[in-house]
Amino acid sequence: MMRAVEYNNYGGPEVLQLTEVTKPVPKENQILIKIIASTVTIADVRLRKADPYLVKFVMGFWHPKKKTLGIEFSGIVEAVGKDVKNYKVNDEVFGSAGFSFGTYAEYICLPEDGVIGLKPENISFQLAAAVTFGGLTALHFLRLGQTGKGKKILIYGASGNCGTAAVQLAKYFGAEVTGLCSTNNVKLVKSIGADKIVDYTKDDIGNYPNSFDIVFDTVGKSPFGKSVTALKEKGYYLRLVHMNPSVVLAGFFTGLTKGKKVIGGTAKERKEDLEFLRGLLISGDFIPVIDREFPLEKISEAHTYAETGRKKGSVVINVAQAGK
Ligand SMILES: NC(=O)c1ccc[n+]([C@@H]2O[C@H](COP(=O)([O-])OP(=O)(O)OC[C@H]3O[C@@H](n4cnc5c(N)ncnc54)[C@H](OP(=O)(O)O)[C@@H]3O)[C@@H](O)[C@H]2O)c1
Image (cartoon, rainbow, N blue to C red; front, side, top):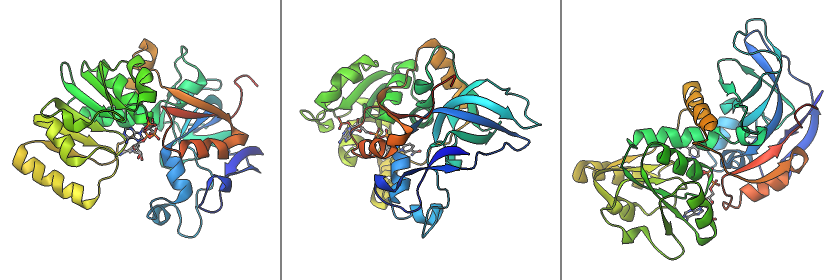
């Protein structure tokens, strides 16, 4: 048996219950991972609440079909299926379980060709668990926006999980980064490499017309008209929070009439991108930001905090201690 957090009904953080379930056994192509750390992403929060309501059509209409949430993980390989070639017992790994979920548990089985990589030795299990949700998402959108040397980029929501990854990755690609955040987070956003700051409690994106090659909204709070106006000719407006129909329509006309591109959609999680991030973790060009850590038994508290929408970077869940 193993400890796992389950939820049987959609609702508040209290629906998450620590319980005992059967420990999984790896299939031929799977590895059994003893999870050391996981995180609470905003996706976990939304799935728990079935927010938006459409979640129920995917996760189960009356009750969630997958009872254990959790997307990101780091851990140690405890067993491998007979066809597994790339991992062995005791390998330290990290990655994303994606839509399989299930990382709020002591063990998980995942296919070896999943979004999994060897944990860099120079980072902790906690940092390794906090790489994929923000890192892979930011990477996907920064590439779509042709982020590169000398490009001026404004990152809207620079203190969140995706925002802190976006600031660091845009700097790595050679861009001049302006981070938009509140006064509380100015120090943090500067410390991860932002060249300039727009403090949204005192200033406004509307004060920067024709200033950026890319406006990357990582929190879905940027005003459409002002953001497009802040772009230079042929600039990219990247929105990783799903766009409502009026924004999609406005984006379409902006593309037709102003030559500026409005890009949304869902980031793909790819093993080769995880390998790319692994290189940056080793070189120190990307260090995930951790806000708070909670033990697995305090998962409801961790969800309550993440749900405030005020977290900086990631909220980490410590599931076990390495070596125990
Ligand atoms: N399209 C995709 O594939 C994809 C993938 C991953 C995530 N997402 C979406 O991306 C969004 C962000 O995810 P996340 O994990 O980065 O969120 P998060 O970590 O929960 O974001 C929290 C941060 O947002 C900042 N914030 C809140 N209101 C703000 C405002 N008005 N202006 C600027 N910053 C503000 C907060 O800073 P303050 O407290 O200082 O305001 C806080 O640091 C979510 O909606 C998620 O669903 C989409």
